[in-house]
Image (cartoon, rainbow, N blue to C red; front, side, top):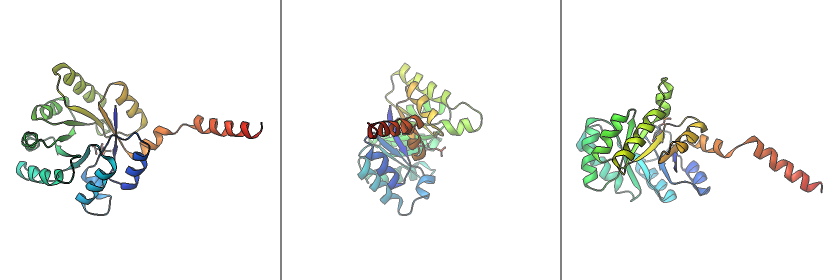
Length: 212
Ligand code: E4P
């Protein structure tokens, strides 16, 4: 499974990229709004660090403006992937961008049917928001499982991104059900590497060695 970092924060990206396990980054307007500076400059800086797919989202809601915005973002780097919301205009924009070889990450997907439409429109990635569905008492993982099943059944080459991750258990679930990608917030990445028994173990080994 590919591991993406879900942030627009440069320090966080540098830190996790330094671990040598980072495959890509996803941003969204809320994440970008937390950072100082120009949207496009931040995207460029991220692409220079990561050298893998970096999703930047359009703000427009109408097809032609989405396409225009997407072309501009895409000119920043070959690594830029355009996040397009799952709407009727989003599908039209995705179809157009697909014909221009601009990769699309269809975002805000909350059902297998929405995902299917995104796949049919030519999205390279489908971001299935698991946590936001869990938040309203709807098991978000079911949508990812359905999407993986239909991608396998019809041999689509779209990849599913297990998104809106809330805790490390989501990462484990994403991996064992065969999600192509999980996009993980920084604080969850930090939790993934931590285990109290690892810390206790290191301490004990060092103590034993000093007392030999
Ligand atoms: C996905 O690409 C989104 O940026 C993200 O996972 C949304 O997560 P949230 O529900 O925590 O905002």
